[in-house]
Structure formats: structure tokens, C-alpha cells
Length: 203
Length: 139
Image (cartoon, rainbow over all chains, first blue to last red; front, side):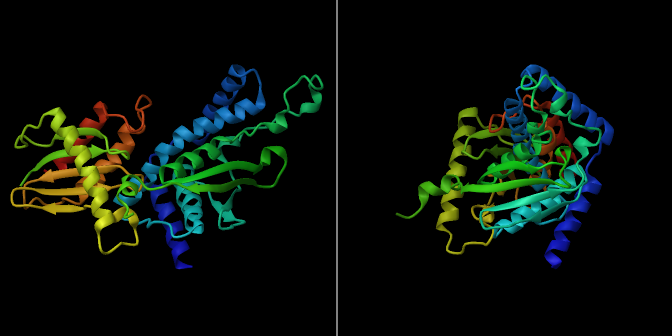
């Protein structure tokens, strides 16, 4: 129990030290990014979800080093995670807290997957998805399919890839679609081999 | 007691950055640097495998500190596999702190540079200045 208290405290400490930007600016910038992508990809919703995930991936591979570096110099030791629960806790309590200042909970933990619950999402504070029924019937884009915050899934995938965990992430529940909470499901596909050490293992 | 060199090795063993940290640092040619980088990477991996005691933190296995008569070398490997290696004259203080501060500068300057590709040689002016600042702080 005290270990999770430590992790939560670590997240708060890192959030306190990190330079911050205006929430509205952040949300509106992301919103304009989404509208640009909608224009670029001609409102092809599945393709847009994919692009958002790819953008998130590029961010994630860099975020993970920042999380590890800043905790190192702030005297917070994040040991190698012994099991998936610790990995999930670090992502939820330290990662989301440090970069976004939001509370994130872990749930539905199995030995190969877990869920992250976000009750507040700074990206969608001004967002409402248009309802598809008003559109030209089957010609309009199906807005319910748009995963507005899919960038998070990419960030998590990129970050874990850098620490040798290959995962697949997806949004299963989204407040923009009417659910009460945002839920991201993370499935571990494989644990990648360590670097050069593999070549030198004893036969 | 001054610092001599900094070199950074990426996950695959390629050298992505090297620079002298003071005027006392001997001049080492580029080819020699590349050789040093990959040799150190292999030695680090061999040392981790050859170690009779495995630490619980597998990323802390491998070479951390080499103390020789004319030189001390300190290596910090991040959990993402990047090695930050500093050499200095014997008796230099704060050897452990410098690579960690350089790691933070790496994340703040290099990784946030939109034109920097991961695992590629580092050519960021901001990063060079940040390392200069760290040297002023500890040197």
C-alpha cells in the first residue's frame, strides 16, 4: 500500500516541477490539429484514428525518456517493474499525472493486459462530437467512430516500446460518445529481447 | 580535477554523440570515437552477462564505473538503452550526477527537437549549450 502512495507522491512531485502551459491553449491547439487532419484525410475516420495513433507513437517514444530522466534527478527511483501491475501504476500515476496533471486509475488487470481510466481529459474540455443522424445519411462521416483522444493510445504504445514491451492500445469507452469515463485498454503482445546481451548468452 | 570526454551510445551500439568536456581532453579522431563507442557497448553487454551476481534491476547490470590510474569512467544506462559515458581525471567529484543531468538535457533539448530522429547522431545547438552549462556547474 505504501508503494502506491510513493508512486502517487512521485507523480505529484514531478508535476510540480514540470513547466506548464495554459490548458485552454493545449485543448484548442489539439482541436485545430484534429480539424486539420480531418481536412487532410477527407474525413476518413478510420484513417484519422490511425494517424492520431501514429502521432502519439512519435510523442511516446520521447516522453518515456523524459519521465525516466526527470524522476532520476528528482531522487525518485522507478525500479524495473516486476509485473504488469507496476508498469500500469507508473503509467497511470506518474506518466499521466506528470504530463497532464490528471488522475488516472488502473483496472481490469490480467497478466497480459490492463485498463486505464481517465475521468478528466484535458484534450476534450471544449469538444462535442456532431451527431451523425443529421448528416446526409450514409454519406456523412460516422462521428461516433472518431477516437478523439486516440493520441494517448499511441503515446502509451511508443513509450512501452522503448522499454521493450510491445503493446496494443485502444480506446474502449469515451465520454465524447456518452460513456461515463474514458477507458483505454492496453494489451501486451510480447516482451522484446534486450539489446546486445542476446548475442553473448551462453549456448 | 576535470572532466575529459562525453560520449553517448544508442540502443544498437552506435555512437550518437561525442565531445570533449574541457581543454585537457586529449584529441581523439572520429574513427577512433566510433570504435570506442561500439567497443564500449559490447563490453557493457558482456560484463552484464559475465557478472556472477545479477542485480534485480537488469538495466543496472553492466559497466558502471571504471577506475584506472590515469582515468575514471562513469557510465549511466537509461532504461531505454541509451548509455551516457563520462571520462575524467581521477579524483573528480560528482561523477555520478553528471550523466544523469546530461540525460535530462538530452530529453529536454534533443528529444524535443522536432528535426531530431531517434538513434541518429545528435546535432542540436541547445544540447551543446546545455552540456556546457552542466560543465560550468560541476567543473
